Image (cartoon, rainbow, N blue to C red; front, side, top):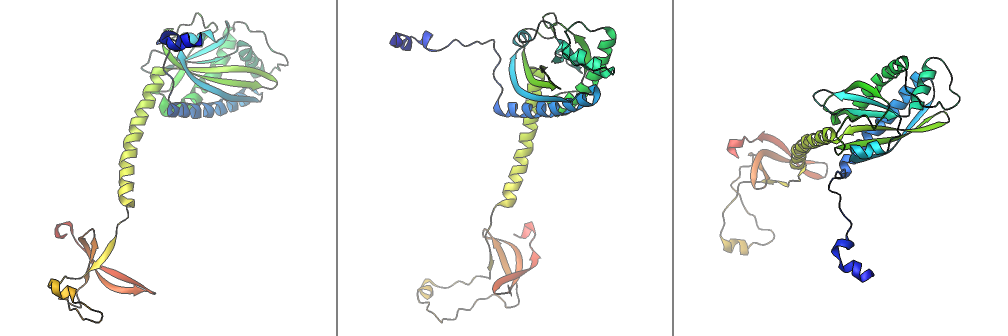
Length: 297
């Protein structure tokens, strides 16, 4: 049986779902995780101050999936706040439990929530309070994502049924960040959904800009940091090969270089300056007297 499965290529390899979005690259995932972790800290601080209940948010992960897959993971009744970006039809979504939203309302009105609140549709006044809260939340999300968004996210609407909220076509790819939320002793989850086309385009553009800047900067740094040998050279003298073979210790070899004329400072067989020899402590040194112009090198 095992051999038959091994020999049958149709059974050996699992089916590939071409409708499923490709996975995020490692660098893209890392940048998104860093941005959403920053958002989690800022959102928790906002909720703690505004709702007057200590709140902790922890990023659980960032995934790329279809919008239908995302909608299927949500409760049948939940708070979904949409955020619009200028020039784009696809909105982003911040999702959290309706019971959590009602707890926020109670706390903001001066009450104290000691037990979980049963989810229900928000009243107009409750919706207005949540909108005030979410206006600032979208500002924090925009600041955290920075260049990963083409324009700021702003409040667009509040909904409570993900099955009826078709903000994006079911098969379209979306990026979903999941957060574990803790308010006092109560625990819940929250998500942020962004259209993948918007974010991936911004990631690719920022990568191109960073790569161009990196290439130019790296080239300059490499050139400036390259080690070069420098030496001092006097005017050469031509002698016969036989004289070279007859050289011996103690021989005096005269050169035509005047005693008062500076030596040439050489890099790669090219004179770049004039210098006079000297010493610094026990080491030989030279003092630059003239920098040669490009036309004279």
